[in-house]
Image (cartoon, rainbow, N blue to C red; front, side):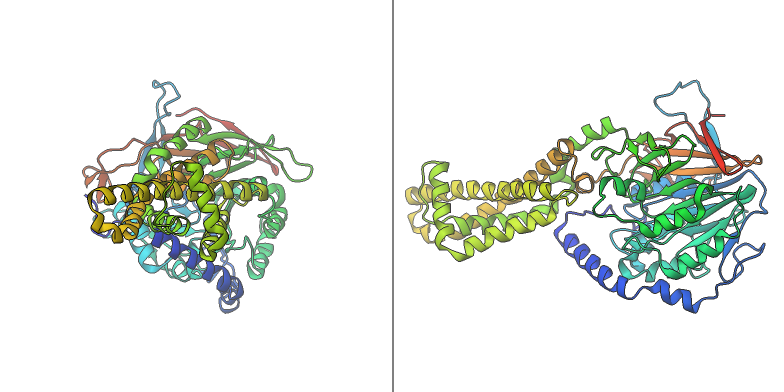
Length: 584
């Protein structure tokens, strides 16, 4: 039983969605960089700091240091997609207590870890898909969280926790207008209060811990007022205190995988500003769980499993990430799902792509029909593929539109190809393009030949209708074959050549393998990280029963579990060490 306004997950390969997304990205990129609202915000809003009152001063580090320990926080990133996945995550995150089973790979006799709902909820970026708007936030983010954790007044006696949000690139597609109205207006979000005043923030937590959320905009850039704020903040953080740094994107992975495309200079400057006090890096953007650790126990965690489609975990090798100059490398300690399972999961695209992206065929259908009409004459009579190829070459030599169309198709497909390696973009792009062209020609040639033979023998009076009938039949064939060609290309690109992970993942549209983080600051000052995994999301929901704040409860799906043993960060005079701990 879903609410009437509940939305299914975004179909990224729907033709209209592709056009809308391209338009929104282009507009946001042009106007967002030349009319940065953060600069106006930095001028018009007070730049004072708080002193001991939670969320009450105009702007500054929000002070929670006086709160008793243990102090709990929740971190959820990449939300606001389909109802099933986001509500499954929101429901489990909203419960007062959550017992986490030890996971499939561990001894079933081990008892679960007991966790509590966080006093603070951190959204780690990309709070809504496919692009920010008031309607999208309302139906894809607010609606599921309101059902999972309603505002006070529903009979539950509890104090309202607080929520803070880091904006991601999808939040920036309307120049941060809707994000600012929702999170930066001193209002509320479902059952959480939202004291945040800017798109970036700092939280002073108990036992010498700080949490810093940045705003990278669209161009991986930290603006001047934001950088100035963090420079002032740095002077307030003692040398033996510890920092949790939250970015919308995992710069430590992007710089490794796409060194020619990502240059996080302003982020590097910010990280250098806080130096060794940073003990934990958090990011979303990739919709899976990934943890890297160096020999000092500094953690870099990607936890983007809040509701958007699963990002497959294999592809480019990020097993070892180089540290800063003089620093030890970061080694990958855990992936969820595992690389091996992810590799097998990618092959299911060959079967599931035409089903989960059924509307994509409406783009390939006319493309195949036009391609066949441009390269094959209606009176084509050939006895083999070789003869058909010769006729196509002849048509390209004397028909300008045919040549133009082939060049346009090839250019468009090359532009779509993964850009991390220029040689791969041209080689794989041209192979992909000519695979579609060859499929259209072969289908069109076979259909023209069959129609001509059938009409001459049985319906000669229908011969004038042969061209439109051939175009229609080729379009139908293109609706079926075109998506299969793309699915094969994406699967081979990822599983063989380690490219197109984003495209193969969005094509798979898997709502499963969700995750979020639950953090606990102990009275001793230790920070424990509980990585919460949900292997299968719910698809059926019913009225809640029993002691729960939620209006609906999942009727199927799997229970939350620990993706790996909790990670403990111990602070010792500016250094840190970490260790796995067994469940309580």
